[in-house]
Length: 431
Image 1 (cartoon, rainbow, N blue to C red):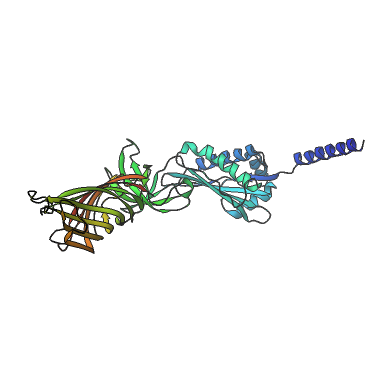
Image 2: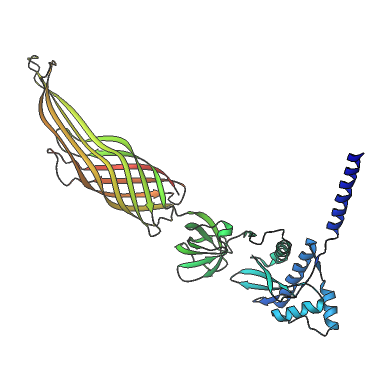
């Protein structure tokens, strides 16, 4: 019986709490006519009506209808239209006997419509909340006004924390302003995922043809600045559409397949060796960059000369070996039009070099300790490097490069010229 009695008490408490929740007192609120900036007053009044309807839809407030507002104000001989400043709105709220007044503004600037609203506390006369939303098309204004009302309603009732940010992504990026001959402003920012060094194509608003390309240089919360890096047809204009094309990648690492070619004109002749090396690139926005490569770029050759075999007991085999090895390089580069899909470059740098030459005579029939070393030379030095090539898909995550390096030896080594010509195919990852 005690358990049954306790259960009944709990149910009664739940029902009472639900009844209290249902009878929760709502805030009385009224919406003044929105002011117009670079738009018609008719449009501003229409947007304020849509906003008022959006507040009603939230079911969070007691919203005073426009007709009731006009009737009450008419009795007090107060003109609703033309009440644009804060003091007037407070006076209107007191006459309407509401706790909150909402004022707003509809403006049109550089092809974008902005709806701004402020909530005034009638008792204190202070602005307690402010919100803003924007759109490109005039036909989107009704939906955006209702969306703004929903955001504001949730903010006022604590459904959205005060410090939370309501993210409203722009469905279409456009150029809103031309600052100078090289700089433009777009209507997308951090909230839309725009990042520094992003690259966008510019499209003609009518024919939707590519007219240019911009690179983002500064990102703010709701807009970004970009530099014009290419004009295909006509100069950019406000209202033109932009589309993401890639990103200026500053860092890259990958591997190079090398073909080391020597044209040394000695008895050993020329040769060709294939090997791999790794590299790391940094490319600044100015086009200047730096490459550091590690690995073996080597040309080596060995030749055996068999002497007179008429007397095998004294027959000699002469063995010659040479190696021109370059192990690490540091090169300063300049990339032309790095924001394009194909970017030629040139560079100058230094490389660590290791040269080896060995010559010895061996008996045709091996006998212990019967080797005569004629020459055994090794040298380590630093040698200059010239570099040219072309980066393909330089603004993509995966890129290729056709590269040619010339390792220029300043001195001969054991009678040889250890200079090398090294064509390479590169595959790298950009970020």
